[in-house]
Image (cartoon, rainbow, N blue to C red; front, side):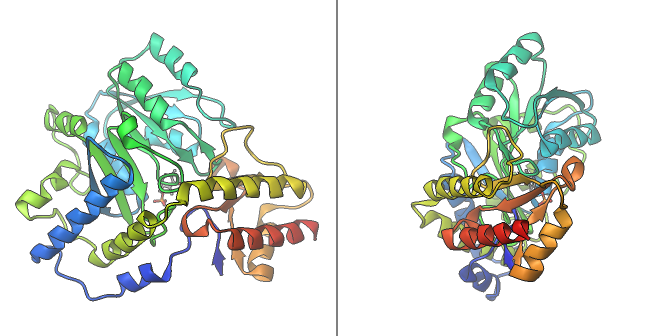
Length: 358
Ligand SMILES: *Cc1c(COP(=O)(O)O)cnc(C)c1O
């Protein structure tokens, strides 16, 4: 089965091979601490971080989102939840789970958040400890300019938590040029390692905010302060999944050795959108389409399940349907990371054309 979903994505053989090697004891072997730190240093470099430290956590992408909210939120804190998609809105649940008051800034789900609209909103109310935002909201495929949005929040003294799980390593992101306090990523999207790991990039300002809380962080596993000093202390709060991290490192080395990544994502997203509209299908969004996933309306006269099933059974290609409010309404092609090559995308589009025709 060829995986063409917006995560998990295809995994290169050298990543699978890295995960099968003998591993060290992550708690006791000093060389593991060096390996882990070196990998985090490369993660910082990969996104142009200047003021951030990167960490790899043992848990799926969702763990990073929850860890950010658990570590920053104190009971009663007001948090601005920028809601222009399912993941965007979903942050409100994490905020409230840890006692915060989530205030939604809701915008049109069919286009990216307009920076001027955010500024106008903050002119009226900017009393927030932090704001949450999503780089690519995968269910709709909308891409937000989180560099600009985060700088606007910073103008009002508001910290920022950004979910770039399905964008980073496929969409350009210059952390040094943004004002993001906690950036969240996952192993199984554009980085193209198997699912299982979260990556977070944490600013010094975010750590100061955690340290000066009046109440303790109400989690152990999702407490970012617990892992902060792992290197000085040669201590992790829990045993690190060594094989997963070896795989992630191989995937990161693949990314760093590829000078054409971002241009390729742009080109292939463009090719995909054109092919989809040329075959008479309609894109879900009005504008703001990401370069990592293309979301397509299910045409009249058929349904998502019969399209997905035919793609799988007749052509051996797995694409995705919609989730939540979009269930049954859209199908999605993930062209990020290892999926982002012309051969696989062409094959997927050729199959889709035949399925739709049938
Ligand atoms: C995939 C994804 C996550 C992580 O979700 P998982 O279910 O843990 O994979 C978070 N945010 C976005 C936008 C995602 O696409």
